[in-house]
Length: 122
Image (cartoon, rainbow, N blue to C red; front, side):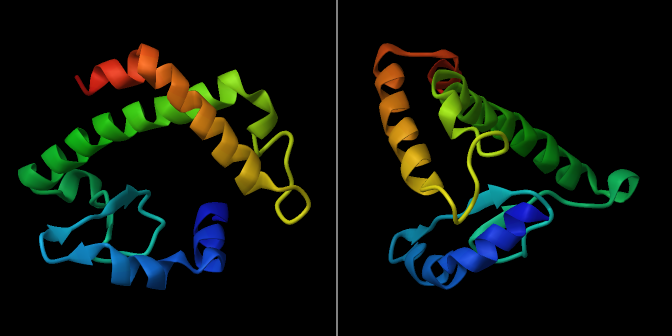
């Protein structure tokens, strides 16, 4: 899986292990079930029909939120098609992170006016 390879190469796992816990609680990311299970990296429950009702409800609720977050990624690619990694950029050959960070920052301007993604969390 390309995502897990990029996460491992990024060196972020040890950084997150130290920085996402603090005196007031902790933060966590939510990702695919392909990511390693860590205190700070939550994934959906696997098991299909063998899930408890609570696990199935958790998967359903988190899936809805995850879809809304994916809409945000779609906005960035739609407004700034040059950052579409799959079609335009090559890891280690173009400054992908800089391009994408800049597009995300500029996309924040649309959040000031409001959009479908920001309205979902109102």
